[in-house]
Length: 255
Image (cartoon, rainbow, N blue to C red; front, side, top):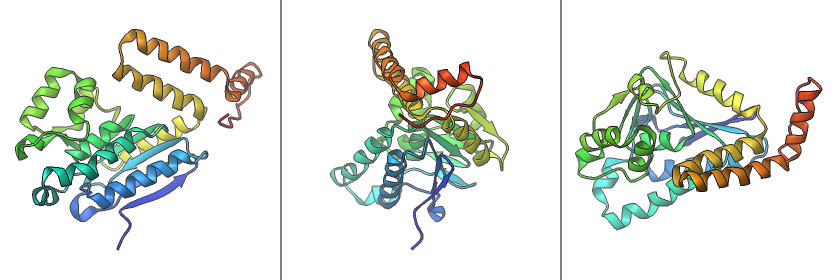
């Protein structure tokens, strides 16, 4: 049986490739567990400073396995999915979604859980759960509303309408749109830039930015000041500033 998630370390970038092409990478229980485990392993690896999650040319991820949803009642289905989303959201290492083809339902939610999205011009996003008489269950209503605003999120979720990469770019949902065959290379290039930055600082910056989604301005600024103080106390901060003054390349050690 093939591995459901292929992993490859490319320098300081960890690549997770969803590998269930026969089902357009639908998020089956096995794939969810394999992906969460791979992400947590990279998150604990001091040599990995950024993570890319990718599918294939045809699909990033087509969402939940509808057949499995149809065959299980609510109590049986919610139990295995809820911990998966918490595990993905708790990854401290910056994550980039590399999206080509379908990113629908849970696949769209997986992309939204990442910190940045690079999309092929072929990418197709959507939260079509309403057409199955359910609603998004992996954070889609919350993240989409925060990212693109209430009116647009309402339209997309209440109609289930799909939208392409250029519309996603215009709404501020994705960072970059690439030509058909360049989506993975562009995502890896972005990840490599992030990975070259001091790793503790990138994790602290990610935490500070995510705090903005969950708190008011005053609490967010207080959190930022606290995290700034943590960054100021690191060896990497001393090395970065000394290297700047000495006009040389810094050597970061994640301390």
